[in-house]
Image (cartoon, rainbow, N blue to C red; front, side, top):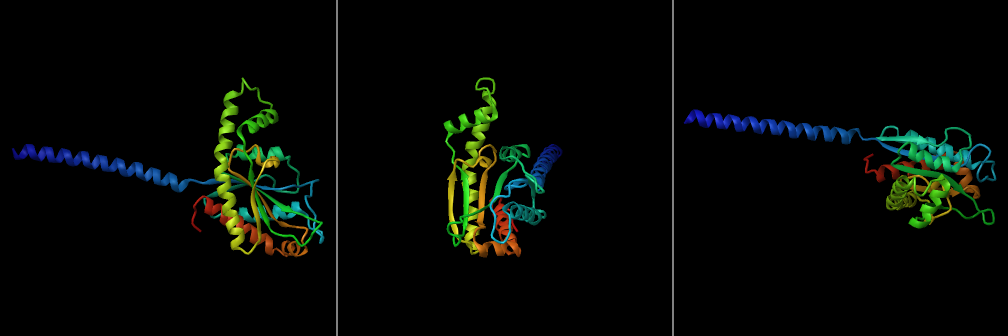
Length: 252
């Protein structure tokens, strides 16, 4: 009788150990996968090449500042679980539509386009503006079909997937835009608003959550001077870096 009970006990113990080992193995693999996860962020330094963007009174060009900030953000994020891809890495012009499609090519988790504002009628104006895409399903579907030369019948599945991805990206885009807005204000920069925009093509064709960040007004002499001496390059790179890490809930 005791021998039978011992066999039952040993068999139960064996089963328990096997199940525990399997559970720990699966958990360990899942945990390792989570640790190994690297987010992909595409940063778009606006303008470039023959398109200088807005010009400052001290000779600064928007295209140059945009690239400096983007490169600095990439450098700051290099020690985190974030892979950064830039839409341009030199003074070359990349068509706006192509910039947006890079987001899809790299399977980005986030896309941010960096720009500078200008208002020469009043050079005292300054502050940051953040835009997200103003999405309306029917209008967007028509726009997508026209731009990508899709056939409504033959490409129906691709169109639906693309439109659904865009629709699902809007709330995360607004979330990211508001995170940037909070960090702008925390760093003492005036926030002029978080706004939807339908016309900015760079936001229209990527499937990832997307924002366009107008850092400041280059038409303001004080702002331009701070970009020229590097203070604002470092500050806005930090704001973008902090916002990206906060969006992905990555501890600093």
